[in-house]
Image 1 (cartoon, rainbow, N blue to C red):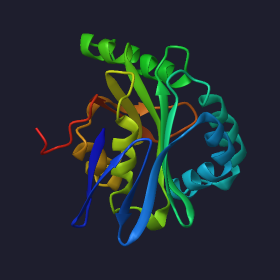
Image 2 (cartoon, helix red, strand yellow; image 1 turned 90 degrees about the vertical axis):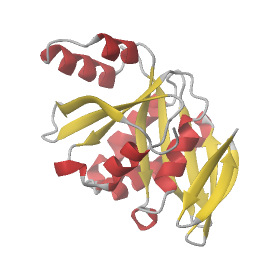
Image 3 (cartoon, rainbow, N blue to C red; image 1 turned 120 degrees about the vertical axis):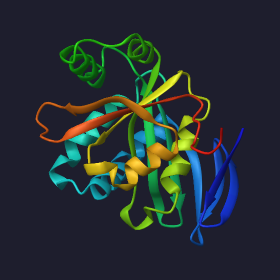
Length: 215
């Protein structure tokens, strides 16, 4: 399976588990990490997450512990982008399940909104949770996030992907731009998590992805 990746006039094809792409004259290798490799890389992955999201470094230890629990979940998969400077971006997730905290938050919100539609119920019964996707700030905005998303979504054992992203006015940020280009649509909007004042959008896509303009 080869995935076409285009960035600033450069077009490349990569396959999973490993291949190289070039972005702004920097060569990146995209490869799927084993659970053991993910566990070893966890501190650095969380550092990328903190930098990309501009979070307080105090969340580092709790994030490492939480993500370590994710790697034993059914369907766990992680793709990392590496350069000569090390890991510069990653995406990971696992099969959605009613026993996860996030699934319970979705069902709570849907219940508060009058209940899930038949279409939403279908998604909840067969989805892959895109838990995290992050790129170091200096490499953002040049297509590496799209490459990671396409690589992670290849050959998933689920019919749908769900993800969560903070709401922003008019969807005016790079995250929304990426997800819309990759064919994601609304599943649920204005979701509030406990202990987080920000509203979040829950977006969905069927698998395989259908980027805009490829139909």
